[in-house]
Length: 597
Image (cartoon, rainbow, N blue to C red; front, side):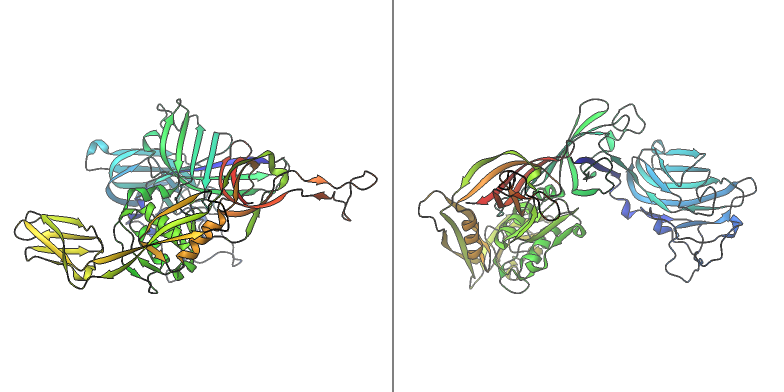
């Protein structure tokens, strides 16, 4: 029996904290105050004489101003006095963007194995400073007994954060601070999670670009209660990052645990069912693609730089998605493009590029976005003992023909009028063009300044006059129809793909592969226990349970190593396109697999 434990990491962190500046007049010359930002690693071992004890076995490092590996963010240049008092040691004055909003601060004082009370102080004071005195906040924390603490003090419109060391546990001690996190991270497991379903979908060919979703219900004594001073209700927003995972073991005594990452999610909707119980509708960061229009298209002519790899990154550059979380397979550099992308949402633009490139996207499991070429071989297995009976046939996919339109483009020999506009002097406007143009040929009348241009737009400003015209050379399109034919003899279903104004050099082969895959295929619905299987992969599984091989005298046949021999009665290989995984109840999964007949 599998024993599962879902886990949710909930990051209540100020997303703008990367731009905050740290400063201190009380830091040692060898320390680097900028390292305080979100730093929750350990100190390296070093000796300081105020502890009156050390070890000289070369296991500890010497603090040296000339060494670049010193990773001490803050160590005060003053000791506490004989009464353990610090003389107004301001650790850090943190300048924010002027309107910061905090739920709490997490402070890490580091760890020194030779100090009975480590390096943490006995007493500190934290101040929030605002231009409006009504928004100022102050909190004094006394009798600190841990190297990491959370200061539960919310604040609005914060301009500066001051952290003071007031008292040490023993006389003549330095003050240490190793990390400041502008928020707090919570972890919930099966003791708190009552429901958690993750839904993943990866179509065989990218006629749509689905977004992975999740539904999460948490019960917490104080984190969602309006009356609690630790409530996070008013600080949750659509930038709150939620990381979902699950661990699996086979028995209670089994020490080996398989940890499955299900990715990062963001909040779409919140339903407070009671003071302590809340349900979240979640989706991956891909949902941000819907918020942006991709207008900075180019006219591609199949050159080495006109490839899917570069275009995918151009699309993501239009959004606020962190490019460090995006992985694009290097082989997409060799998928050359001709034509252009019409104005559409970034999600639609990305879907179109993936379709014509025979590529696919994972927005789960990899803690980011991963774009790769379509798989060609089996890479995972669903064991027969993980599948629940029955396996149901859902639908037949029988495609005879795919129709699709392609385009060629030729530049006009002379400029034509592409836009007229009535714009008051001093005004700036973005003008969209109905047809693609060569941006290098754009010209305007004398009263209009062209600030920026692309294939489908210009950003212009009026200098004098009101009525203005814009001219450029236009790309003329010629349309031609293509179709694929499968090996079937009867016309079951024809489908059409939207106008492909952008195409790859092997687009005909790609669409033929789509047609062949969908010719005489069947969708099966199964229920099984997920142990890490992902959508978008070819999967080996069994439509029925294995049967024991019985010898002529009626006994179970055993192999030389003593295992009972079983015959896989109906082993299949299919494409796992959809699954809904119940992480809170044993990883039971409803899935759809496409099999060739």
